[in-house]
Length: 162
Image 1 (spheres, rainbow, N blue to C red):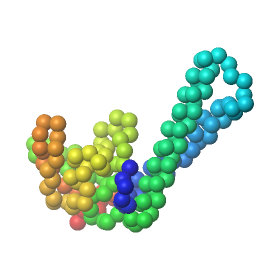
Image 2 (cartoon, rainbow, N blue to C red):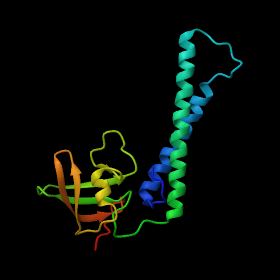
Image 3 (cartoon, rainbow, N blue to C red):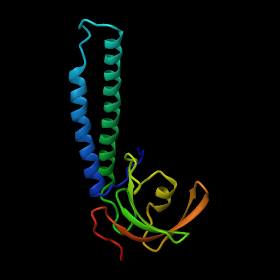
Image 4 (cartoon, rainbow, N blue to C red):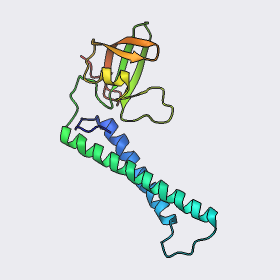
């Protein structure tokens, strides 16, 4: 997660809030399955299962804390500037080879979403703060590449380029 306050779009905020709600529900379910320290311990398999659930609970707590911190930072940063690429923006880019793709700038990668570019990836970092018409250079697996920002949306389908 970012260490300095950075604005996020309303779409990105809603996604984080939904993830937070899902994590809290999952955490409550996991917590309900944990035994108290005074419970009779069964065999080693039971102990291993209990340790796994406790580990899951810690992992969920860490992610809940990260999202809560990120939402608080976004509140401090205020709304994202309009007309500039930010976290949650939908950006159409034309790469140096002429291909055009529409991607969304996200906080973190979700599963295998091929349209999501994380804000801390080379392309994501290059696009942040840019406007339609700007050309950026970024490190790619095959060397440095360039891309032009063709248009910019806020992630809701509304186009905000001028």
